[in-house]
Image 1 (spheres, one colour):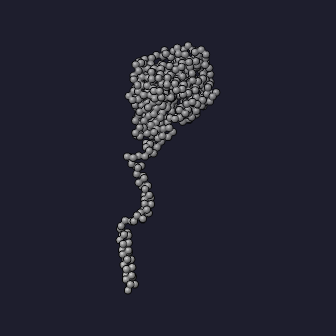
Image 2 (tube, helix red, strand yellow):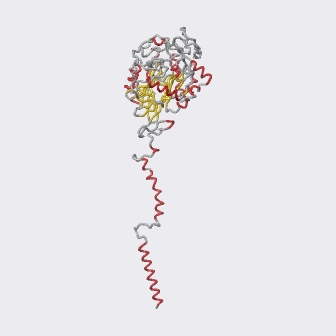
Length: 479
């Protein structure tokens, strides 16, 4: 009997345990036990990639690596987003007059064509685009023109010019046609062969006045070149006639600027104007600059005086009136030894920030100035600027209007007869200043024609200039 009772109790207890287990175990449609959840969690990372892609399209939380506006932003020292990340920037660098003739040719033949760039190449290469005023034809032929200073440079100079970082040159100046139309046509061909872009000259007026557009960092930058310093009206480009883009009449330049404005994000004008060795811009320069900006130019960079001139901001646009010499013949005027590399950081919204590297240039060898000398140059540029100042770091900003009043005067067109000075004086309305008393330690050139110069003679077969004279000449004309 006791055996039966024990068996019954065992069955009852087993049934009770089974019932409890059944009640606590998973039922159909119920959630899984904690012991089973890890297996489910391990499966979720397989679906995470879909969620990970969401931030890339979310405008409210962009990741740093998605900030650049254009695929090329930041490459080769290029544009980075401006403050707020809304616009790319392009860095442009500009230098003044460059040539490889005369004493410069003697120096580079001895030291190599890379010699002039030894101390400045690293600065020129940093920019997205570097621009120079090429103050010489590149040719081994042509006929020397009847003018006081006649230059031509060897095509051997161009690979090093390109290698130093120069991307584009201006041809609208008073030396590009020193060896006639043939010299100009050779120059165009040699530049094209080296892949160096050019403005201001061409095989016709349409080509000479045409703007060169460069696509950089998502921006279209248009460049144009005009000269108001030409020795003879025969140098003017015409319909089917090789020549240069002149600005004695502003109609064609203003039309060209307006056309560039319609096609580009940023319009840069390279001007050739002013009075040689005058540190102040004149009223004619200012008037032309203002007309260029009113027509659509965003930045104006100029040359010809062979010395530095100051800055002006007009309607929010910068004007650099003269960058002086960069690689050029050397004379006894200390102001001609002061130069700069001007950097412009520009946005698609057509604004530019300017800064400069102070340069001392002598005997075809530009070098950055020492800190103290550089600061003195910045102070000088502030004094001779119209309404700008240059701080101790070389940054150009708006400043008070300088009370200096620049001279004014009409500028006559060049005559059909070539004059010996090689240039029409701008700012005074006459060519009398082309025979100034400012000295030069370099001899001038003679011509291959029957007209001889009052200065030492040139080896016209090579284009080299005579050696320097110990006693400065009593007079000088346009360089």
